[in-house]
Image 1 (cartoon, rainbow, N blue to C red):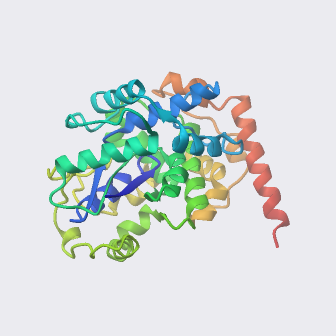
Image 2: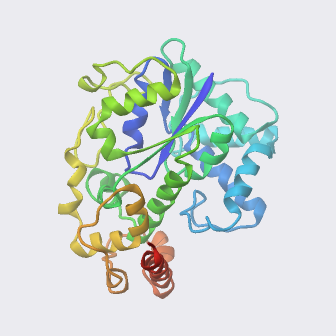
Image 3: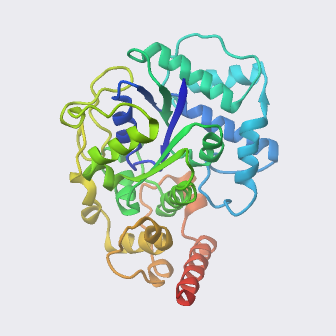
Length: 354
């Protein structure tokens, strides 16, 4: 059974893409069944390197080091023993970080690399829930872009989806998602996580095992994109009535959508511009200034030409922002300096470009 993997920034359309894929009769793509597995494996790697991180699934700020290459090698070569495998699987299938709480008892390998272990888990999950024989089994897991290089090199079909960063921030800090998590994220944290996803999208776009797409294109041209996906996977075309009927999740239950702005059981582009009413002008300009290079690379357009003072003068409203995150992502002198240095570096490149 071949493997598939969907990832991207939270609130970027990963759930919609996963749901469309798993409604194809030859695909079984589960909704975040083993998220804690990815968190714990990355933490294990960091611990073995002696590195400390607030977020095991990083924010991309160490991408210029050799961490990405070392992690990819670790995933392919580090052999997990029976105790490590048992602990990883137990945490991934019983805690709040996993969606496979009904994962069936199954024979697990006594020794395996992470890549072999995840393949085993997904095959067992597909055997429990898939309706009939499937060609591909896998899942979507948010914030796991650093896994894509190793997975793609191991012949796993990977999908990275991105969305306008302003829409991502609005969806994360407003509406039902905010009610679910109970507080807000610092803007800088969301900006850096989005940039990590954008960098992965741009870096992996040419890999033969990776498909990159934008949420906005998916909701507007779903039939065309699904046809292209079916062709790349060498499977039958997606059912033509798929987008005009309710979607079913990987367990067979009707999906009500994952939007912050009401139930949307199928494709709906109505929330695409909601950020214009939810973000202040200063917030939108700050996001645009901090993501200028990546927005340009992905084809997103700023309201107006970004300005340096959108970063230097921005004052964030930190009411109800999670304190543990704010300690690392407050716009203090150091974090503001980092963002201004990025701005200056991009501006200098733009000035010398032909």
